Image 1: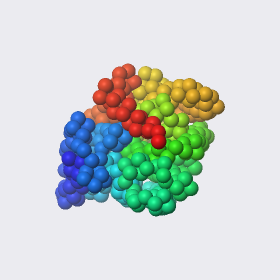
Image 2: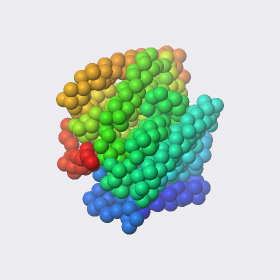
Image 3: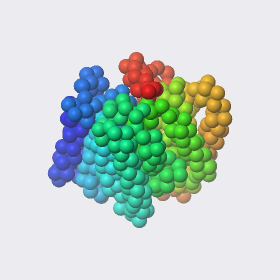
Image 4: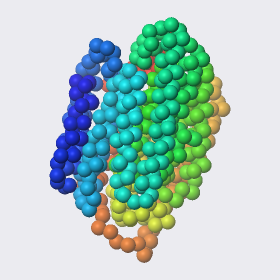
Length: 477
């Protein structure tokens, strides 16, 4: 079953490539997305044991990443059918194939317990996603694609060097050389501290680049700004999670080694720096899709701070992974609708979206309140859990900075979002044929419903998965 859920999307990618019809090809996406989601549900209920060599296993941490990945892809797949119906002037063969290939690679990253295999899966997501950023085939999209490829490729190369250092630490410790997670965690106390520290730094920089931690985030504003909305949703809610899982894996080893202070302090500093960068660049942002890129920089910073704090913040971090993915899906899909209707991403042009597109404008406004941690939406619960843990541990300075950055970001986003949604439409605005349709509104509406539901009530099975995953991260030597 674990091999099947990885191979299935690749078969879908081959089928998408072979279908000649531009109008029928997008239907492959929801079909394979639905099968993938059903297989994910079955794996959550009946989790198989590790593979014979221990390379493949779906542990609770993998489940936390797989759940939003599968749900978000399914929602984006339905949205893609409606979106691509408006883009018949352009071939969607590469887009459909790339989306399914990326789903396969993201799934492999969640179930890989060999760190080399996980690295390969994350690198594959980089290659699969690059042509999708270039979907609009203009000068700005090709610039964004090259920037994404170059920066992320350098980052992932540094992560590979970190894996070499990690493997060498086992040789120095006179252990059997391995990159399997289980033996590394079990024998972490015997690893060479110097080489383990070096591995952590390179892996944090490498996967942090892919994740978009500041100041390693410079590819994000261009890529998120130029990619179609559904591609942006998967970048912010899917690929970010896979890179975060890479950091979590090395975090598990480092925590088990008994030298937690260095690793945790580094993560807290990196997280706060990311939030500070987002706060600065969010204010006065004139492009609403680039604004969402800086929002992603903020939230990966929140995740880094949370796992750096440890203890009760770990549950908040893992819950925030899910909340961020779902809410980013709402924002990117609804912003894609607004972009198509106005033909612009500029906040000087886009005003009064609530009148022109009542559903998309309303969802974008609700997504703004959710992503900034407003109750009763689920990001409020996860962010409150992290802040509460910070003050409970006596780390008042960290908690205070966290709150200040959140306040500045809320004000900055509000200054962009509120006129965009509630303002008056410019009188000289050109008419377009795009309006809210079922297939482009229902997907973000469903995600918004989940964000509200999880803010009011967290299902017991999901709660159990989050608690089990947090316990894995709390493991002590």
